[in-house]
Image 1 (cartoon, rainbow, N blue to C red):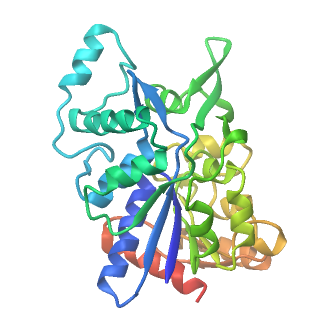
Image 2: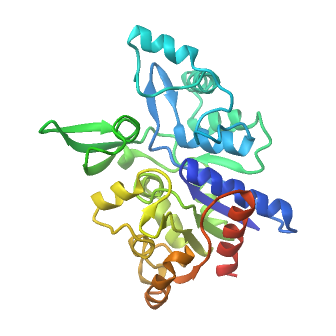
Image 3: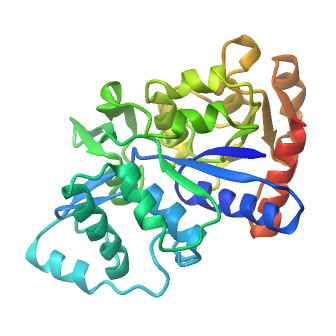
Length: 322
C-alpha cells in the first residue's frame, strides 16, 4: 500500500509520525511518501531555511524539540546571539546552533548546484525516517503577506508575520511569490498518481496545504489520481490548535469551521479535491451536510496528544475510504 501525505510543519509532522506509528504497530504493509510545504522557506543571514521540511525531518528523526514544537532538542543559540549582536538577520527569528548546522549544510549543497529535492534526500539519509520526504517543488516559492501597519500597506514574509507579529496585523492577502513558474519536485506527481490513498494532513489550509496545491500540476494530479483523497480537519470547535489558520482562513473569506474548510477544498464529485473528510467529535453536527455535498465524512477524536492518538486518527482516515 502506498500512502501519500501532503503536509505542513509542526501539525503535519505530528500527523506523519502518528501514521508511521500506525504502520509499525499493525501488519499494514505500507510505503509512506510525504510532500512537504516549501512556502515558509526563506533566506536568513545568508542561509536557506526550510521550516516545514525541517520540522518534518526532525520529528521523524526523533530529534525535535517537543516543548517548543520546532528546532532541535537540547540546542543552544550562541550563533544567533552573535548574529543579533552584529545586527545581522532577523532578530526575532532564532535558529539554534544545531538547526543552523542543517541550514548551512543545505545552503552549501544548494550552492554546489543540487536541487532542493536532492538536498532533502541527502539530509534525510542521516536518520532512518521510515518515510520518503519530498519538497513540493525545487523552485523558490515563498509566501508573503499583505498587511496594513501604521496606516501603510506593507508586504511581510510569512515568517515575519507569524513569528514577529504573531498574526496581530490583519492580513489582506497571501501571495506565493514565484509559484506560477514552479513545477512539482521530482517524484511528487508520481507519488500522487501511484498512491493507494492520498491524505491531506491537518495543516494550515491556506499557507501550507494551499501553497502545495498552488504549484502548477499538483492540484491537477490530485484531481486525476485514482486514489481516494482524504483530509483531516485542522479546526476543532472553531479553533485552530496550531499555527495561524484562524487568521489565514478569515483573510480568504472561509469560516473558521471544520465543515467550511472541507467545502473550501471541495468534493471531487463536484470538481473539488476531497473524497473524505474527518472532523473532531465536537464538530459532528457538520457531518450530514458534508455527506449531502458529496464528501464522505466521519467524526472522530482529532487531538494529536501522542503517537497512539494520532495513529488512531490515521487509521480512521484510511478506514473511511476502504
